Amino acid sequence: MSSDTDVLILGSGIAGLSAAIRAADTGLRVRIITKADTFDDSNTAWAQGGIVGPARNDDATTLSKDILGAGGALCYGKAVNQLAVEGPPLVDQFLVGECGVEFAHAPDGSPDLAQEGAHSRRRIYHWKDKSGWAIHKGLFETAQAMDQIEMSTGHMAIDIITVCHHSTDTKDRYRKDRAIGAYVLDIATGEVNPVLAPVTVLATGGVGQVFRHTSNPDVATGDGIAMAYRAGLSIINAEFVQFHPTSLFHRDFPNFLISEAVRGEGAILINRSGESFMKRYHPELQDLAPRDEVSRAIYQETESRGESHVYLDATKLHDVDPSDRFPWIFETCMEAGIDMRKDPIPVVPAAHYFCGGVKADLQGRTDLPGLYAVGETACTGVHGANRLASVSLLEGLYTGVECGSRLSKAIVPIKERYRTSIPDWVSPEEEADPAHIHNDLSNVQGLMWNYVGISRTERRLQRALSDLDYLNHRIDRFYREARPSRSLIEMRNAVVTASLIAQAAQTNRVSMGCHYLSG
Ligand code: SIN
Image 1 (cartoon, rainbow, N blue to C red):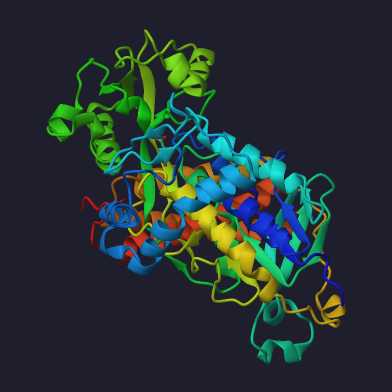
Image 2 (image 1 turned 90 degrees about the horizontal axis):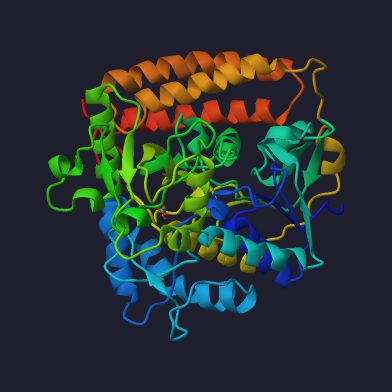
C-alpha cells in the first residue's frame, strides 16, 4: 500500500524543519503540518537570545562542562559530549552554509558572539533580539523551495496511530507495536482523516501554555507530550520546567519575553518602592544570578509584598541604544506604552523551557518504532535538571539533522491491509462549548502556576494532583462528547501534560535545578 507520505512531521520549529530538509535531501517525501495559521508560530521563531555556535576560543570540553554545570548530575554525559562536539559546526555548515541564515557580524566580518549567563565563553550566534526569527526564516525558505516537502498550516494531529492500538484486526494487538501515522484534524473544515506514514516525527515544541505566565506562544500546549503518553511512551524529567525571570507584565502582550541580555547590558530589577532587591537575594551576582534564582527572588518579592509583578529598570544601560540592540523588545514596549529609555518595564517570571519530554536519543528514536521525537518535545538527557541558555536551539538543530539524515534507512513500508483495518474517525455532532474550554484551561493554568510553579511544596503538589485528577476526568468526557476543534484538543493535551509535570514533581522529593521544593 502506498502511504500518504514517507515522513509526517508534526511541528515547524528548528527541529521539525531541519529534519524535513535532511529527510528530503535523501529523497523521502515529507509532509510538515502545523496547527497554527503561519509556520512562524513557534518557540524557535520567538527565541530572542541565540544559538551556541563555533567560536575561536572555545572547545567541546569547555562547552560540555558548562552544559553539565547547569544541568548537574541528571545530564546524560554521553549525549552532552556528542552534542558539544558535533552540534556547533552545524550552525556554520547547515544553518549559514546551506540555509542562508544570517547572524550578526563584528566589524571584522567574524560572527559577533554574545555572552550569556553561565556560559564561560562568548559563543552565542545571534541576530540582535530576533535570533530565532532569523533561523526560522532561513530554514523555512529552504524547506519551502524543496519539491519533496509539502507543508500545511491549520492542521493538527489528534493522536498517533499505532498498529496495536488502532487496528480493528484483533490479531494486530499481539504484534510488536509501531506508529504508522496520525489522525489529523483540518481545523477549518473540522474533518479528521488518518494520515498514514512509515515515520512520524513529533516536533511539537514546549509546554509553557499549561502555566498562567509563559514566554511561549499559544501553540505550546504540550501536544506531542500528551500524544506520546497516550501512545504508551515514557515521558521523563517532567518536573524540570525552566522559568525565565522576565516576561512583560501587560495584558495585551501576555507572552512577551524581555531577554536576559537586557540585564546583561546593565538593566536592574526593582520593586514597586524602587529598591534594587536582588542585592538581598544574591549579593555577589545580583541581577545576573542564575535564571532560576532570579525567578525565585522575584516570586518571593511579589509574594511577600502582595504584588503582582516587579520592574526591570533599563534606563541606564551601558553604552547601548536599546532601539538598536533590542529592536523587538524596544518596539513591543513602545506599543505597550512603555519607553524603556525612561520607564521601568513591568515584568513577571514565566514558564519558558521544558527540560523533560519524550524519552529519545539524539537521532530522535523513541521506544516506539516508527515514532521519533526531536527538539523541545524530546528529552535526550542533554539538559538534565536545568538548561543552559541557547543550547536548546542547538539541540533542536542537531536532533533534527541527525534524525532526518537517517530516516531513509528506517522506512518500513506500511502494510496494504492497514488501509482498511485502521478505522475512519467518527466525530460527535455537538460543538464544544467555548466557555467550558476557556474556563477549564484557565483552571489548569492557574493551578499549575500556583501549585506546580517556581516554588513547590508537598501540600501544593497534592492539591494540584487532586484538582488535575478531577479536571482530567471532566475534560476527557467533554472531549469524547464534542466535535474536535483546535482548542478542545489543546485543552485535552494541556491537562494530560500538566498532570505528568505535577506527578513527576510530587515523586521527586529533592530540589535540583529548576525543580525547587520549599516545603
Ligand atoms: C533570553 O534571551 O533571555 C532567553 C535565551 C534562552 O532562553 O536561551
